[in-house]
Image 1 (cartoon, rainbow, N blue to C red):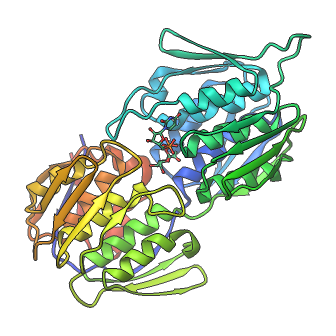
Image 2 (image 1 turned 90 degrees about the horizontal axis):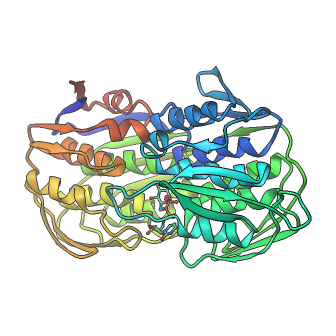
Length: 423
Ligand code: UD1
């Protein structure tokens, strides 16, 4: 299994370019299922999760071509296997995003239940309830979710309906929004997720001929149409990748010029980094950060967008580990998302955990150690801790990292980090 070896203690300095967003690419690629005409997607990041989605679509009968380095052409004219098998879903929970589009276009779908994952239970009850409200019948058989639409007078089209989401769910909102695009009549999703990735998906769907309004607000209205058509779509910059590099630069007291970002998606993170003492200047799609002194500890509480993203919690914890003072971090989205803290403690971090609250007392210096990555963002946070530490850190199980960060070693090496991959 691949490992990363990092020799810490170097200040990151230089320029870095942000890649396309994983969490935007995955739903957009799945949106191709909704149409019999091709969808051309540019700025697609080269990531394991993208490869898994492409494999899932090809298994279903789609044609997926990598037209150029970051361009994909998806043609779902002839889907003949309306199923997401366990082997693929268990490696990537976001596979559930094929459910809504399949039911909407074909009136049936079979998707393996995702099961638990390292950061929590992550049920899909809201996806199911929403599709039921739109007229799908759903049963669970042999670990698979079977969905079917049978209208009384014949026909397999979903029916628009009001949907209230008990909890704010990103992929839940995306799945239901996609399903509703082809329903008969109007759907109103209340308590919808407001994440930029949801907004981008709505714009992509509208480019395909859907009629969605209100995305980015908590009430989204979708007027169903009969079919969607061909479109071209460019994936937005990855705000979590951007935030990760900014946090890494801050933790190493470095100096970074980031290009190709969307700073308006990063307000909560930039705010915290400024509070920690970083000097940040934003101009168009570039963000310049410098950290002249040791960081000050910052408290944070994760929340749905525009609150502080749970996907940035681990990286900011790494910064707090080497900051001056004590901070309190509250994780409100997932019930088991502090596993990185146990690994950071092996590097000398002082962290006390009580339920969903972590209290971090900064130390002047972490020490390199052998640690294990438990999930995608935990891997990123361990890299940050390792870059700021004295001596060598070996991070095991970094396959998580390849799911969500494009060329991370190359990008970090370009900033002066001493990082290499071994087996
Ligand atoms: C998405 C992101 C992930 C991010 C998360 C929260 C993608 C591909 N992944 O995941 O990176 O960490 O949003 O911002 O975009 N829940 C239920 N029932 C459901 C659905 C969700 O109880 O049917 C709960 C979850 O367990 C969790 C909370 O709702 O506690 C939010 O989860 P959700 O927003 O759905 O996360 P994902 O969409 O899976």
